[in-house]
Amino acid sequence: MDGIEVAPSILSADFARLADQLEPLLAAGVRVVHLDVMDGHFVPPITFGPLIVAALREQVHGAGACLDVHLMVERPERHLEAFAESGADSVTIHLEATPHPHYALTAARRLGLRAGVALNPGTPAGAVAELGDALDHVLCMTVDPGWAGQRFIERSPEKVARLRELLPSDVPIQVDGGIDVATAVACRRAGAQLFVAASAIFQAGDAVAAWRELTRAVRAPAA
Image (cartoon, rainbow, N blue to C red; front, side):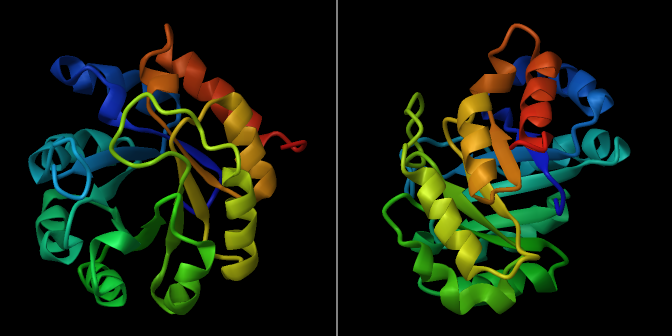
């Protein structure tokens, strides 16, 4: 997760064929698989938990890829151990979901997890300033979490740029929500390195071709 990567989010996948849909993407070179965990409290939907992470662990790790878990849940520090045991490699907690973000991040690291923090669109970039020593990455939400079908928030690249100025150069910025070729390139120019894409990949006619197109776009020198 330290390079420029496009991470397919299984949120838009067909769960009846999840392993079959992931197989060609992993074979094509996907190295980060993103899992959006929602609890029905912090965000309205309920998605899945550690059981899905455990079900994908062998396939994803066997391909040399990592499981990147985005915890859109209240009090995420209470669930870190379960996700670590299930095979997660990275967890991202929401700054807004816990009164103790520094504790949650350091607890994740103690469990051997890469630790990231996510910011909702209404949370200012400066909110991460005191967490720099506990962070491995920052996720800038480019839509409001939990509601499907939203449009990319046009000012998101400006926030990415502010985060890039605030964060150490070795802390990558991830973006999630409404990511397609155009929005990904705009965020890349602002300083993002990790790009989560759900419907742009899994609802495309050819998921591998869609992932490759996004990857080429964000890795192009002009980006």
